[in-house]
Every structure is written in structure tokens, then in C-alpha cells.
Length: 193
Image 1 (cartoon, rainbow, N blue to C red):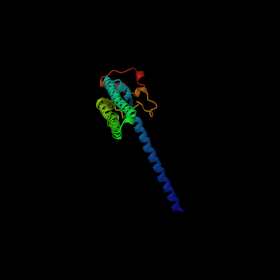
Image 2: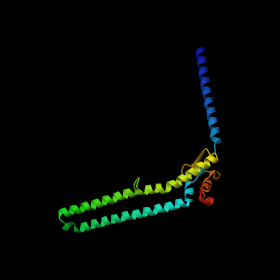
Image 3: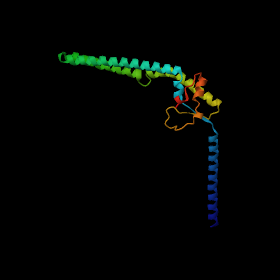
Image 4: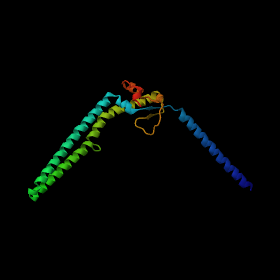
């Protein structure tokens, strides 16, 4: 009976010590986590405040519109070929019908391939976006990193377009600091959102 009582007492002590140890570790973690400095930025606000970014965006928009018009023109040409084929089909011999059908099908394949080449994954528009935007985004990232290191921030959150970040105290928003470091003026505080 004494063995059972000692065993139960010992098991309770071990369990109690584990709880105290876990509680201590949790309290230390909470203390460290709350002692860390943090900040947030609005990368959308920063990027739209940089003239090079706005110019790059205009260039991409123009390219996209031009390429879309080019593709629409080619589809219109195919549509015209098809309508012409339909009006003449009754008078054409079978071999000419087949030849025209294949011509229309091949032109349509070419235009779809051009569309994929321009707008598809890894396409011309994506490559151009990478070429124009990446250097600007890299400068912004480097400025954020430098500011975070200088001001000893443990982490920096991006509040642009984030549905998970519900509230940020404006005093922790370092977007204007980033713009100043990049050499750009700041917008009015209301523009940051």
C-alpha cells in the first residue's frame, strides 16, 4: 500500500514539475516576444509614391494594350476568313474546302500561341514586368531591411492588401521612413490608409 502511495505521490510531483517548467518556459517566451520591436509598412503606398514605379506600370499597361489589339486584329482576320469561306463553301471543290479549313485552323492556332506567348505564364508581359519592377521592388526591400536593422525591429509586417492584419497603430508604420531613405517625398498621411 505504501508503495502505491509513494508511486502516486511521485507521479503527482513529476506532473506538477512539468507544469511549472512549461509555465516558466511560456512566461519567458511571452516576455521575449513582447520585448521585441515591430513595425509595419504599406508597400503599395511606397511603390505608388515612386515615380519610376508609376512609369514602369504605364509602360506595362501600354504594352498590354498594344499586344491585346494585335491579337484582336488577328482574330478579326480569322473571323473574316471564316465568313468568306462560309459564303464560298458551296461553290468550292472538296480539296479547296479542306485547304481553306486547314488554313483557318492553322491561323487560329498561331494566334492562340501568340496570345500564350504574350500573356501566358512566363510570357512576354511577365518577363517585362520582372525586368521593370524587380529592381524597384529590390530597392524598397533593401530600404525596409536597412531601416529594420537600424531601428532594431524584430519583424516588419506589410499591411498592403492584407486581410489578416486588422489594425496597426500608425506610430508603428514606417512607410514614410522608407520613402525618405529612398529619396522620395511623402504623401499626406491620409493617402497611406
